[in-house]
Length: 124
Length: 124
DNA sequence: GATAAAATGAGAATAGTTATCAACTTTAGG
DNA sequence: CCTAAAGTTGATAACTATTCTCATTTTATC
Image (cartoon, rainbow over all chains, first blue to last red; front, side, top):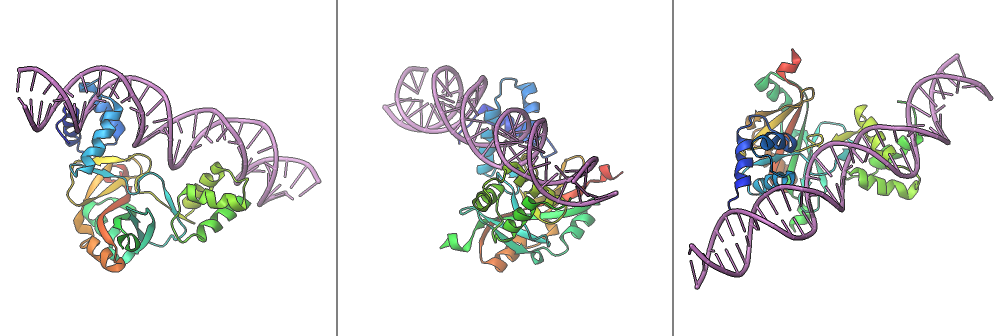
């Protein structure tokens, strides 16, 4: 990844935003200073920056939603290779909601954890 | 929500699938037994079942991705009312990846937690 | 069984994102 | 500091996942 003016602008704009903006929001902000910037350039650069670990893309699962008939508190692991989703017991994060509530003072109604990695089968 | 044949079929199909299928996967399975079922019916019913707490929709954030220039391990809270995203420190779930790794034997490369609820401002 | 409310299928519509491609930038080597 | 190769850009078409619309059919109620 070599230098690019647009990428620098995008990264700076993201850094100046305390919130965790969506691409759409960033696009609106960017266009004010830089009316010619293209939406494709924005997405391309956000993805590149994320792939290089310079920023982080927050979006649990990637494209499509998954559905689970098990409604008991539990979490999920998605294999980056085979894309299968596995259950992880709620024990890995005890009192999670309570702790987060104490830290923030927000009313927290639920939590989802999504782990990423490579499952046993794909590891072999 | 009153009874519906299609909803029953959809729920049963979901229950019989160990994996956590996407709508697309479910649609393929459903069509075999029930060729006339419509994709809209499937989505409508999955949403209804999820709203009624009968199944769970797994998808971190809703529609669009958010981007974060802070790449240190930390988690997020999204306010269901104003849709703003807030940071939550990694302390709420100590040794999370290690614990999940011990439980599963998978190679875990990362974890995302998304909390849902109502933020302080919206609570007032 | 008649009637109102809810659910359906088909396909159009939408939102978010990615792909394509010709023109322009950046980098490295001579 | 010129040039060729590699990378990046803007514009727009294309794609994917999901929701909306609406005429028809099912379900619940009296």
